[in-house]
Length: 267
Image (cartoon, rainbow, N blue to C red; front, side, top):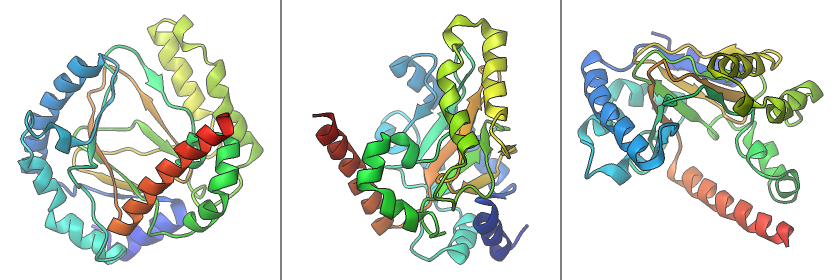
C-alpha cells in the first residue's frame, strides 16, 4: 500500500489518488446488502433513471446504518487520510454521504465540468466567487471529493493537472459546451451509449478512474471531471467529501450565496 506521502503527492500533482482495496471484504458485503435496498428505494421514490440516494442518514428508518458507520469509522482509512491532511478532516458523515447508482434504463453522461465554477451562471461566478476560487484551487486541504466503489466502477473520468488552473483552455470549454448538441433523446440505446462515450473521450487529456470493489478514490472536483453511465453495469459507489467542520460550513454558505446572487441577477 502506498504511503500517505505518496498519495498526497499524487493528489497535489495529478488532482486524484486511489487507495486500493482499502475496504475489507466483510464490509463490502454488508454495504452491498444495504445499497441493494437503497437502489430499490431510490427508484420507487424518483424513477428508474435516478442515480443517487443522498444523504443516507435521511433513510435511517429504512436502511441499516451500521455498515455506513463502520465505513465512516474504518481505522485504516481514517489513519491515512489524517496523515495526509489534518486530524480535523473527516469523511462518511451520515448527513452527507450518498450512494451513486447505475441508470435503470438508458445510458447517460453528465457534462464535463468543474465543481462550483461550472454549476452556476458565468456572471454569478465572476461576481461572487472568482477570488475565492483562485484561493481554493491551490489549497490541497479543500475541495476534496470521494468515490468509494462496492462494485467495479469506471464511470468517472478526470483531466490530470486541471485542478489548480484558474483558466480553462478554449478546447476544454468547447468540449464542455458540446453536451447540448448530443441529441440523446433522438437516438436508440446503442447510439445513445456511443454518443455519451464519444463525448466523454473528446476532452483532451482525460483518463478513466478504474475502481475495483473496495477502492477509495480521492480527487479534487475543481478539476475537469465527468460521469458516463450505462444501465447494464451494476453500480453502488459511496460518494462524499473529505472535509472539516469549518470547510463544510463555508460550502453551505457558498451555496446560499450562489442562490441569492442568481436571484439578484435574474431580476
